[in-house]
Length: 114
Image (cartoon, rainbow, N blue to C red):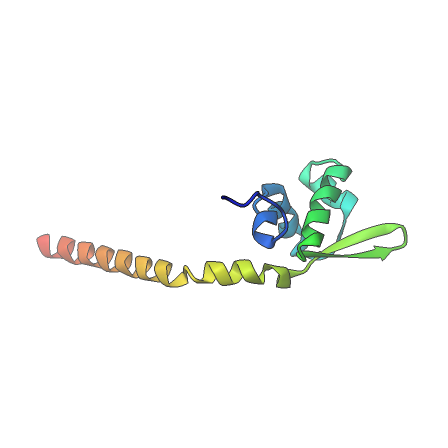
């Protein structure tokens, strides 16, 4: 039986495009939730909900500055995703090497036929 979709891990959390957008902004540094919401064209409660999910799976940190909560990226939480994707690196490298060989063969054949 298939497992129900949850946001209990980084893979599921980043499956949501708006959460990936938030992480993209947080690469540049800390952001208050109100600024993130405004930048992404969403309501503050909607941004807070996404940030809560990202925080629960360890992808963002939060700290209080006065009455404001500032969020920052915790890229360590992306390690499982990075490691999984890294497993495909050899596949892509080999595919690009084959493509490069094919292109070089085409160029060689073209020069020889002229």
